[in-house]
Length: 59
Image 1 (cartoon, rainbow, N blue to C red):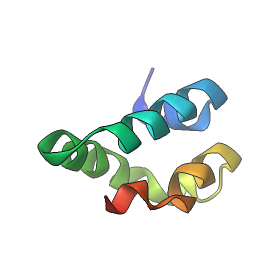
Image 2 (tube, rainbow, N blue to C red):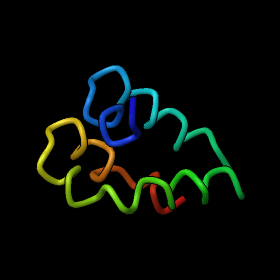
Image 3 (cartoon, rainbow, N blue to C red):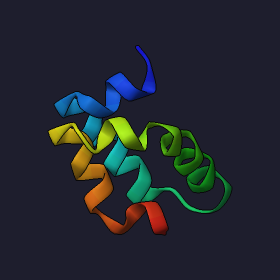
């Protein structure tokens, strides 16, 4: 399964949000960088919007 598919899945989205909120430093930065290319798709997905609506991408 690809990252964009995981972020649009209810459970997968929860896992990504939890990983973003718990990760720090380099790991967090790498996760954010992996998500950034998918932002246009996430804006159109109800579950993707949950990731974008939180401030955890800016941590």
